[in-house]
Structures are given as structure tokens and as C-alpha cells.
Amino acid sequence: MNQDMDEVLQRYMAQHGLKSTRQRSLIIDTFFSVGGHLSVEELWNRVRQQDTRVSVATVYRTMKLLNECGLAHARNFGDGQTRYEAAAGRHHHDHLICTHCGTIVEFEDDRIEHMQEAVARKHGFTVTSHKMELYGLCRNCQRQGVAKSEA
Image (cartoon, rainbow, N blue to C red):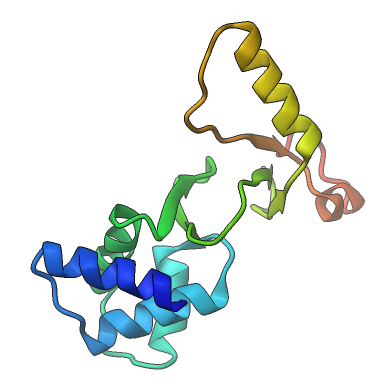
């Protein structure tokens, strides 16, 4: 986490009467160092490798805090779990999600962004945010012969 992100977090915590704790700092540092799209349980398992006293409830509360202050986005990719990704300092991106193994691939494509802007303009619409998620089978699952009906 960089200095700007830390300032956002500290300001938010002060405004809401929250204190910085060692466990909260460990969770936040682990989240930002790992990257990707982590569920609370996945993050908790990583944090417990460093401190077994951290509860899953503390991880839930910390990720809720990061989401509320805008440093993380909560996402649901259809697997029933909320996953978190870092929000600060990242460009907009979209996702490919494998419906069989759960692999999540981030991608950026200016052509898609321009097309979305053109569609919005055509309909007199001002877009304030959007997300695009494409579901299907990843390369590895296709190689393993997973049928579309199994995914």
C-alpha cells in the first residue's frame, strides 16, 4: 500500500472512530501484497500463516472497511463468494471467468471501451461506471476436455 492509499485509510478510520491494530495492518498488507481476486477465506488462510490468532471475522470487517473507503472493490463472479480486488491506482479492466475451475483473467481492451462509449452516446446516456464479465471455459479446462454443459 502506498502513502496516498495509507492516507485515505487513516482519514477514513479517524472519521469513523476506528483504530489501527496490528491484526488489521497484517490483513491489509497481505491483501495488497498478494493481489488478484481473493475471498475472505483465501485471505484469512494466508494471514493465518503469519498469525494464527487472526479471526475470520476480523478479516471480514477489514475487507468491509477497505471496500467502504474505496481501496478495494467487492466483486461476485457467480461462485457464491464475494471476492476483493485492489481498487486504488489501477486502470479499468474487465474479467474473463472460467465457470468450471474459477480462474479469473483480467484484461483491458480499448476497442471495447470505445464501443461502450459509442453505444452510450448513441442513446444519450452518460456512463458513470460499468463492469464487464465474460463467463466460459478457460484454455486449461478446454484442453482437459471439459464440455460446455459441465461448466
